[in-house]
Length: 112
Length: 117
Image (cartoon, rainbow over the protein chains, first blue to last red):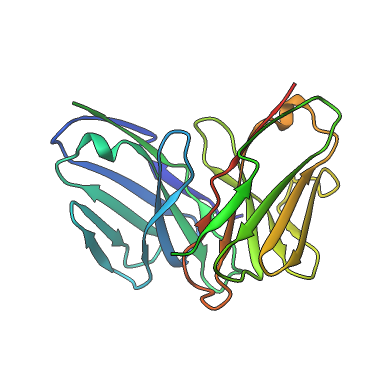
């Protein structure tokens, strides 16, 4: 079945440092979504990427979808303590059913 | 924005009892809802896809007789954990997609933390 892996699993950064999480799918995706989950909370939608090679920015966050539509990345510039949480990518396979498979997640800790 | 209400948020039950969790889309209609399970510090694992007016589609390894899903209307899906045991203790989250926007992102409920004693 489809697998979506993320690295790293955990990341501790000093406040102000940059952070990147990478997402890799075993199958080609029709689109990819990114979610953030705070401790004790539910996943909150951040962004969706659809096109091959697409890059989108949200303030300090930059999202990229690979050319082959099998990988993606999320980069945070100058992290803040409010960035703490677990970041999940979620992919929908090409020509697949509606279901979305979540990545393994990257937990970000920001040290003030 | 689209809101999904999940109830209850927390439930503690005794082993052998059944627990029902409700998932409602408040301001949109959802022909499809998804039920996920999340263990501590783990990712969300899709359990089943709930289809309005028809049987749910279960993922491999998920017991359909254990986790009963009913999607009787375009705004409500329920998950019943039957004869719960301590190993069923987990965080259960539902999500829904607006039927008018089938390729849009998922809208999540707040989740239900189930503890079976």
